[in-house]
Amino acid sequence: MKVAVTGGTGFVGGHLVDALRQRGDEVWIISRSKGKSESRSDVHRVTWSEIAVSPSRLDGIDAIVNLAGESINQRWTEAAKTRILQSRLDAASRIEHLVASLNVKPDVVVNASGISIYGMSRSDTFDESSPWNISDFLSSVVEKWEAAADRINVFRLVKLRVGLVLGKGGGAFPLMSLPYKLFAGGKVGSGKQWMPWLHIEDMVRLILFCIDNPNLEGPVNACAPHPVTNDAFGRALGRALGRPHWFPVPAFILKTVLGELSLLLLEGQRAVPRKAMEHGFTFSYPTIESAMAPLVGSHK
Image (cartoon, rainbow, N blue to C red; front, side):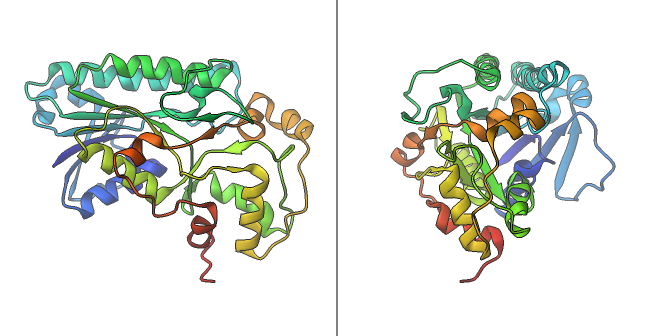
């Protein structure tokens, strides 16, 4: 299979590219520039500028996975908000024009999206049929992001609504585990906020599942079947590391230090992956307890 990946040098994208290579797929990474790192001989690198001149290079591509977008893990100044939104709209628009220019179009586009589209709640449970609640910055970004993806004229579009992806080599987990390693871990705010999470291995497996399953389309929640509260997450992390869970971080401190970004830590939603499970996907790490041992390197 011939697969193109945008955002292929990022945390999730890098793991996905490795998985595609391991199963023998022909991999193309699309980026704004080829970068300074040496390209692997079995991975093709192409820039958007090169595609604009010669889109036929990707004729016959079977699938496109769009993971491109400015990191949300930064203080949300007005300039940062613009970059976060525009980077996602630009990537979707570029894929829209690429697909339109291809003589042989891909069978599927898997476009990253976000769990945030359901809004924040401590009482409701959200699956793919749940209504949207556009009530804050992130939910408004996801709404516009999915609208841009819907304009891609492809036979099958999957909008992968991603939760918190946990992995040792990147993403948020190394920073989340640091206070516990320093014996200063504890709940954030009230600790009652839900965390829709997913182990990086299951994230990659789910993307491959979406590529390979011809009956899977539309929104798909990318989160484990057993979400946890922030307090339960911290307790599981503390147990795995053999560290106490005792040093709470008051909400007002996060709001003072992080501003609006603190919403990522203080609010959440209880989302479940109904559609993936109905189509037969099984999770290697369905519970936070099963995920913690490989994340912290424990062999207990």
